Image 1: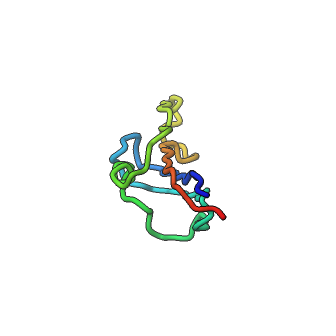
Image 2 (image 1 turned 180 degrees about the horizontal axis):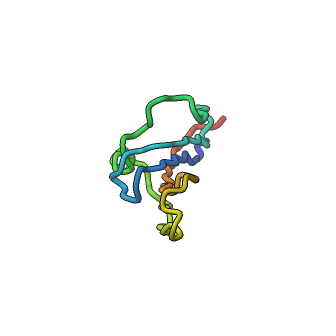
Image 3 (image 1 turned 90 degrees about the vertical axis):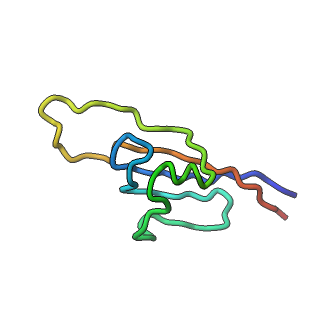
Length: 94
């Protein structure tokens, strides 16, 4: 029997542009074929978000562009340029 499972890739980019460099990432594998964990690699899986698209990942959410409040332009906080990608993978169950 076959089943379709989802893989999710979260890329944090240096800017809001999809061709900006990846500065942080997470990978989740709903197929159970791999068990990636945060921090298990020093190298991002892709150099840019566009590279992930070229490899077959589908973009399904991009970060909202929210300007900083006046006077807080240089505050350090969460990584705000988050892009979520998915791949649908057919697996064999049995």
